[in-house]
Image 1 (cartoon, each protein chain N blue to C red):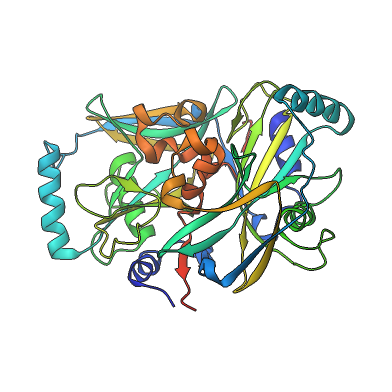
Image 2: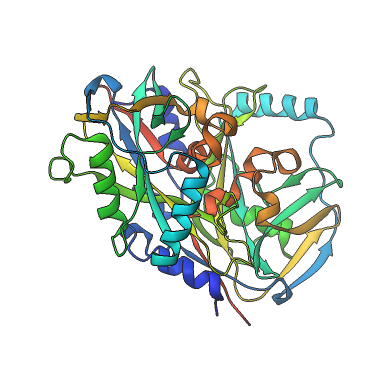
Length: 218
Length: 218
C-alpha cells in the first residue's frame, strides 16, 4: 500500500490541527472495477431554455433546488482520477442529481448514484459511502452562473449544488446508462480546466487537496 | 445575528453527513477591529532568483519546505471579506510563512501571525484560533508552479503550503509592519481571479464554500 509521494503527504499532515485525523482517502486501481451498460435514461431537457423553464416552475412549486453530486476517485498510472459522466459527447457532469422535496442529501445521492452507476435502480444493491461535504455552489438567480458563495443581495437563491466525497470499496460493478459515458479523468487534467469541465469540476482538485490520498496496491 | 441568506445556508446543510456539525464560521464587522502599524520587516529576497537560490540551499539543509497560511474573514457590506497582505504595492499574500525545522503547523502559524499581524512578536499577546486545514498546495520542483496535488512522478516535493481557517474573536488589534498593507478583499472579488491573486488565493472561496458563514451583528 502507498508509494513514495504518499508517504511524504502523510508526514506533512502529521501535526495538523486535530480535526484532520480522518482526512484520508484510499483509492484503488481502475482495474478493480467492472464496467457495464444498461438502458438509456431520458434527459428531461432538450435545450437550455427547456431547463430554465423547468427550473422556474419547480422553484415556484418547491423552492430552492438542491442537487447533490459525488466526487469519486480511482487510481490509474499512480495518479488519482476523477469519475465523470459525459453527456452526448459534449459536457461533463459529476454523478448525482436533484433531491426530491424533503429528501436527505445522503438518501438522494444514494438514489442518484444507483440510478446512474448501478444495476439496480432502487438503491438496494449498492450502498454508497457518502462522506464529507467538500463544497457548495449557489445560483442566486435563474439566469446567473453558480458561485461558491451567496452574494449579499441574494435573499432567495434558486439552486444549490453540494459536492460529497464518496469512497469506493475495493471492488464494485458500475452499470451506466447507454447514453452516458463514464470516464476516469486525471486530477491534473481537471485542475483549473474551466473551459472543458466548468468551474465546479475544475475546482475539485483544490477541494480534495487537504486529504491524504492513499493509493492501495492490490 | 445572521441575515436572510445565512438562514438559507443553515437550512441547506441541515441533513448533511455527520462530520459537518461544526462547519460554521462566525464573522464580525471590520469595524470591530483596530488597525495600527509597527516597524517594517525585512524581506529576505530581492528577486525571484534570490528566492530560488535560498529555497535550494534550504532544501539541501532541511528538506521539504512547509509554509502555513491563514484564511481570516471579516464582514463588510454584508459580504465576507478575506484578509490579505499586499507587498510593495504589488502582489498579495495570505498571512503566514515558513515553518522552522520541527515546528508544528499551529505553533508556526501562531508565530507568523503574531509577527505580521500583532504588536508582540513572541506570540504571547495574541492566541490565534487555528482551525481546519482547508487545502494543501505542492511545488514538486524548484522551477515549477504549485498544484493542489502531487504529480505521480514527484518523489521529492520541494515545497508544501497549507491553508488553515483562523477564526477571529469579536475584537482584536492588528498591528502590521509598515511595509506591508493589510486589506480586506470581498470573496466575490477573489473568486477565480488568478490574474490578480494567483491560484492559491483565488481558490479560497471554493475551499470555504462548505462552511456556513454567520454574519454576527454587533
